[in-house]
Image (cartoon, rainbow, N blue to C red; front, side, top):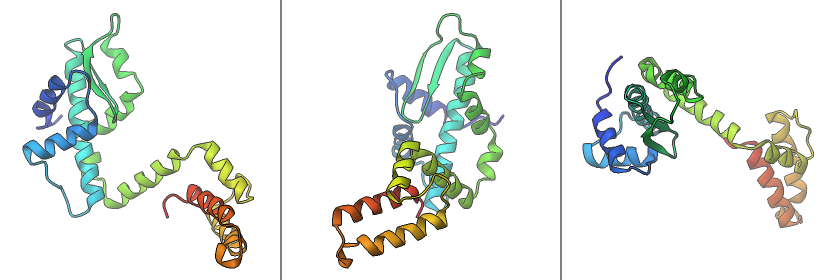
Length: 190
């Protein structure tokens, strides 16, 4: 496994921020202090590459520190170095939910083979998962659609309701805003 050159700088940040630090602050600090510049012409791909490099370093550190009975807790909003809880083994750490993420970020081929289109698909999937089931169901109810409605049905129904309820057509602005909000909820990538 290739040693990530960001490890010493990230370890210094973890030492400095004993209460924890976010991935955003790690990236910002690396940008400010070691000239962690854009890695490509496309902003989203460059941001993904920065994210990947930081997460790769964190998961490499997590493995190495576990051997010393230290726990590196990793989530995008909170990364913290602590001591391993009593009775926790290295095996238990590798079997955690983060183990799958660790496998992904430790494989450099995922960095090398991810294209701009892949990043766009990842972001689109993220936004689809971000919308809660309740929000989706409420939006479908507002548009008077069933749970199996496809994108074409959502678009068609929105146009129909907008033609009736748009303020320029004499409709109630509050009703139109609810319809538009439901449409935005169901089509976040548009």
